[in-house]
Length: 296
View 1: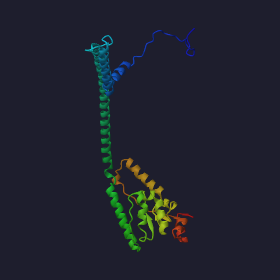
View 2 (view 1 turned 60 degrees about the horizontal axis):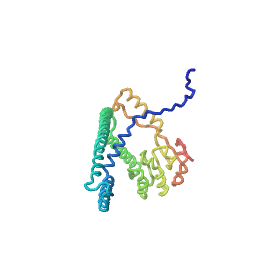
View 3 (view 1 turned 90 degrees about the vertical axis):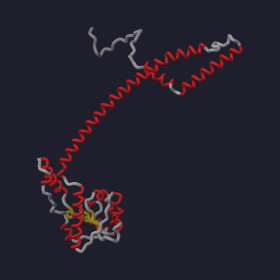
View 4 (view 1 turned 30 degrees about the vertical axis):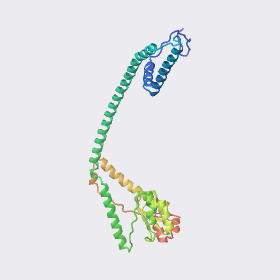
């Protein structure tokens, strides 16, 4: 009958079983060498030798036949010689195993260093490529200069309307509330731009406006849902659409510097009647009709 895989075979007992060629003896040699190099071994050996000598000396004084190893302690010397003859090969074996491990570790370190070097060279090439590709992209200093020009334009336009612009910078999100409170007594209206720190902490702006009882006006329409009484800004969808068109031109091979910048020409007015009332502001019917959205 042919053997089947689903039919269990009979258990066979063998008198001698082959043991796996493990590394037990090598581990024993390392453990022995490690123990012989420890202070505990020296202490045990000292106690053993002193006890051996003292016992034999005292027993020899009582009777010569009681001392099993009288002076000059030949049996003790023989035991030490036997121990030394076995200790030396065990220590050499442990050292050889350590040398093998060091050799493997050195090879792994070399391979790791080669991989790190290859990764570094790859990143260097990528960074060089990015630098070449970003030659036509606006730098941080350029953006800062543009923002300063916008602030100067805002001051000029406000001066024509009989208004004065007072700045309160907030370098971090945690400083937004402090910056807003610093305008108490200096400003009649709080106006915020689309800054990441300000937008992230807009609840702090709303809190400051409520404390000072002055209107909070934003330049992004989403802020009317978070505390602004009114906001006049661009349509984010249209801005994203124009940005997508520019990105498509760059992907087709057009240099970024050759693409003419565009400015939004359409603005939307969003109002929040609840926040406006809390901040001491009311909207006329004419303003409400001009608004794209009014939140009651």
